[in-house]
Length: 338
Image (cartoon, rainbow, N blue to C red; front, side):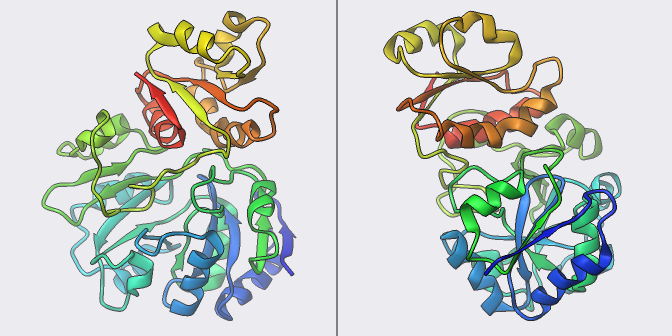
């Protein structure tokens, strides 16, 4: 039986969270909210508990997990390199939605890192996550709390839909503020490399890290590394069960609409009038692009509740937070119209 634990997202009750932390200490698996999406956590040094995460999510064993900490001193338990080069990122973005990849210490189980010699670490800023991690007293390995490949969960209801009955507890802290997973930067190499865009935008990161490398596969349609170098790479992610047609080239929109005359359209508020007479789902507003990111995964989940066989999603100019949104949409899409 899964325990449902409801807490105030801003001022969580410590005694209530302590129950969930005890489950972690006993080798359990607990879903909890962060500022990005809900995570599915276990003690990162308990390999039996970590393997439960992969079993519950049906996640490929070579797909690494992110380790969550509440104190920078915990890096000493995980990292086998100087983190001086990453200090500027840590100072600006921690606690917050940025994950940093370092060379790992031997004590970090290979099950956590997907067999890699690196470990992904972040310090979440969500009050519930931060207090929960403090109470656990150990770094927590936690991917998103969904079935592998499905849209990431931004509400406890999403976690319940996917995982109820398979996890020890679900901490309900309301809707997550950012709505997409953390930005990932690899500092284990000679130069820092962006491996996943997220709520901390490329432009914001570049103001702090002037030599940030951005791989070609993040900028255009090219082959990615066969083996995942970080969470969220190489596998189709974030996808509804129903096919999604992503229109990345607006000049071909009329062609797509003609091909799928009954398909609903997912678009920002500003484009609604263009689809008069057709079923539409509003995805935020271009005036406030972060609303698009915040609503993205909820909208992708909503597609599966529609009667239509396929959905059309209108793409965005990949700039700022919308660069991160397009990264997720490209992974969710069945077909991309360029």
